[in-house]
Amino acid sequence: MKHLTALLMAAVLVLGMSACGRSEQKEDTANMQNTEGEAENVTVSASPEENEVSMMEIPERFVLIEGGTFQMGSPENESWRSDDETQHTVTVSNFYMSQYELTQEEYEKVMGNNPSNFSGSDLPVENISWLDAVSYCNARSESEGRTPVYTIDGQNVSWNRSANGYRLPTEAEWEYACRAGTVTPFNTETSISAEEANYYGHYPYMIEDNYFSQGNLDTQPGEYRQTTVAVNSFAPNAFGLYNTHGNVGEWVWDYYGEYPKTEETDPAGPDSGTLRVYRGGGWNDFAKNMRSAYRATLAQDKGSFNIGMRLVLNAVAGSGSVTGTALQQDYGASDNENVLIAYFSWGGNTAGIAGEIQRQTGADLFEITPVNPYSNDYNTVLDEAQRDQNEQARPELANHIENMEDYDVIILGYPNWWASIPMPIASFLEEYDFEGKTIIPFCSHGGGRFGQSLTAIAKLAPDAVMGEALSVHYSGGATLNEEISQWLDTNGMVHE
Ligand SMILES: Cc1cc2nc3c(=O)[nH]c(=O)nc-3n(C[C@H](O)[C@H](O)[C@H](O)COP(=O)(O)O)c2cc1C
Image 1 (cartoon, rainbow, N blue to C red):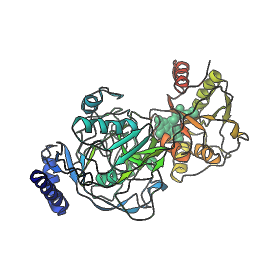
Image 2 (image 1 turned 90 degrees about the vertical axis):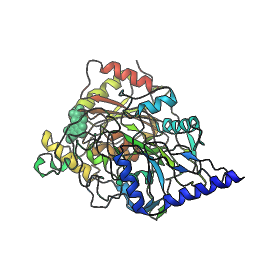
Image 3 (image 1 turned 30 degrees about the horizontal axis):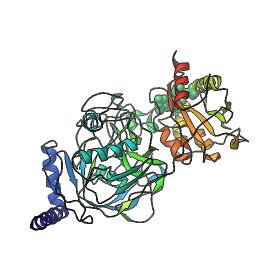
Image 4 (image 1 turned 45 degrees about the horizontal axis):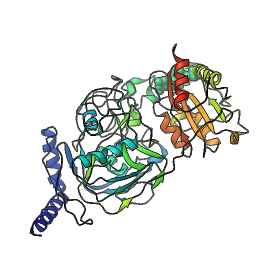
């Protein structure tokens, strides 16, 4: 009993210390930066609710993020913001966050496998789904004697907020930590260069509007590395966190949903959904999609070479638990009578790929055509496309599907335009009800793979199930037929 009282007092002391003065924390953070990740060992208590006080060391390379109140989201005058970034006041409590994205070495040590697309022990793990990320958190907690935070029941995951194990940050914690007190589009202020972050450096912030007038840019185009880089690359933000912008996007706890209009403390997002949020942008993203407020999303059982994770630990035991009910459904296409191939193509590449898919599946083919076609001139269409995207235009479509109810699976093709979908695809997705249907995207691109087009589709058709997507470089090479055939297999589609 004496022992327990001593532990309790120590816990109160530690919590009291971590709750006091902002200036003290600033000093700590600065020290931690100077020693490059040699974070002091700090102790923290687990749940008092569970009547169990287990003193755990905070691992090296974690920093205390002192909580506070901030404006989450972006101001209405921020260029390239999305409507779902509505600014609102959020307070977050103290928490510990890893200075680095989780490495492949750390992942493999616990899980015994490494799903990453790139290979290197100090590179961030990627190609992990949200479900992989929470499984990792629990497995690592168990391996270190911590109480696992998540209860995973198939697609349904609940979060015990008082447990002392590893977890993902909430979306609010992530943005608070990334901003580190800044209110600008990036924590490097109004722009970010390829010397400051690993991203699609050819496309710095505002390049869209200044493609033909690059002298106007704060940051000139830089290197596009086409790979992840070591997690300690570049300078950290003011909280000592590395690569919050770029390298890999980072899964957060929250389901994707609209922000509330009211003030919140320690929000955890909607309690059900189909899509989880990831933040910060990756090696393959344009700068506009690495902004502190930008919200990317994907189904929780899907991964990407552009998405990894960063660990968090409670500094103050939370209370209660957050349930997560997955609205995800399975799908299956037993024959191809219920399959539609719908595509938009400007230069013919997507049309050619759609034709090959049609040949292999025999499915119905539908071309999405705007009433007012885009210019035939390449430079002009670049301008038209970025203008439409910036305005979130919904070009009127010339043709319509009368019997959409007959289709269960829509194979949706489009060219990558400015790292997203051409706006006629948005018009198409808004025209029909996709609830209970499966959308299988394919994207023709000039090097940017999907960009953020899968996020755009998911946001526009949140009730659809998303199949495995295919990206094809321009019109595809000699192996296109084989790639399509394998991709159809992956999606369980019948084909020749
Ligand atoms: C307006 C416009 C914007 C583009 N933006 C991108 C881009 O951001 N990333 C990329 O990889 N390719 C981009 N491209 C290249 C196209 O994705 C690529 O050429 C594709 O094969 C075109 O398909 P289509 O012939 O069906 O129109 C762009 C092309 C155009 C016309």
